Length: 100
Image 1 (cartoon, rainbow, N blue to C red):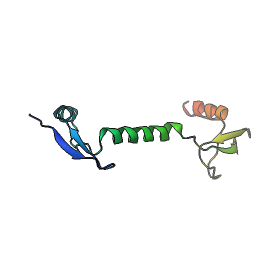
Image 2: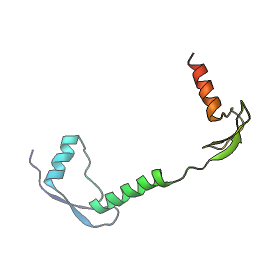
Image 3: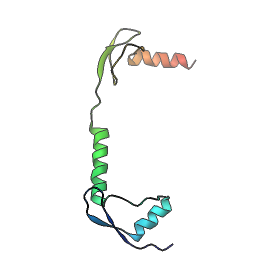
Image 4: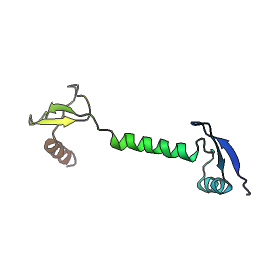
């Protein structure tokens, strides 16, 4: 199949960018059916923002006590009291016991 360069408009910044014949061939080879909607700079910025959000954001931890041994521990969710919460040591023991 023969491809020709296409001029597309970025959905974020509104700038025109070229979707080259080589990029079109690459998309077809990988089975990608949709044309890019963002220019290269906006795609890069968006990817950096998404990666920074996932890796750079600190997870909020909640202080609580282990339901088994009573030791203080932290969990990444707000405890409701409906289910038991275990410290690392008790969780490891419970996991081993459940596989037997």
